[in-house]
Image (cartoon, rainbow, N blue to C red; front, side, top):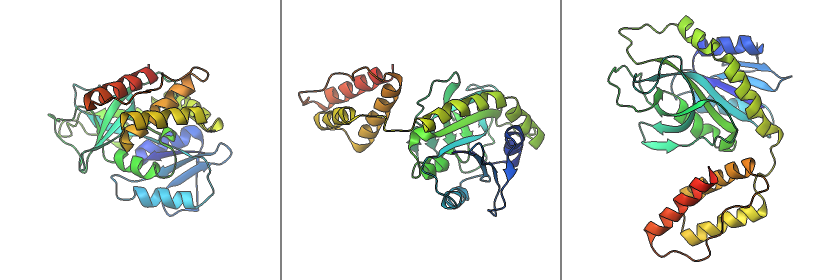
Length: 274
């Protein structure tokens, strides 16, 4: 199952029309569906407040062994980072209030530009924005909630730049937002089809040999839980692209220097993601 997540009605409308989704009467919040395609859309509203309750209520309504969440919507940007109308696949999310970062695990081949996104609590209205990234109000919370439900390689964020946060000069109407989404629907459809292939082939990505390799590196390099998670995700990426190739050589002797351990870890990660 694929579940599209949007914040605004103006974001949802062109997607609903393009994919022929119908309103579900089973929820007291916006849910649209085409069960023959196993495709759903949830309207979350602006900001973080309703995200957890709506996603959890939706999931509780059925038995979904495998689900992908795709957040599609607009985002602001400073004019030096991107142009209005640009579409980016997000590879890093920074939550401004907590200063925590999250990393969507992009395992499929694609031709989209990747970029970072900062989630803020209030609408950014600053032509001199200090954010060296796109800006939205939902993504970090979506990642937190959805990553408790499904593996992070089944969560994706597609953002279209709608403004340079100059709201006194440019009025961002619903029609403008819908038009921005509409121009990218073919790209979005292609991504959803490719992304869905992960679901169809969803079986253990890593063999026991791969898992043993990760465990050995964790032990020898004294990796933290965060580093181990990063290594596991990058190993999955490598294995999906190189199904029959061996992983890099095992670390047989434990380096005594923390600096050396960190360098080796970085080198391994770079090798896995080449």
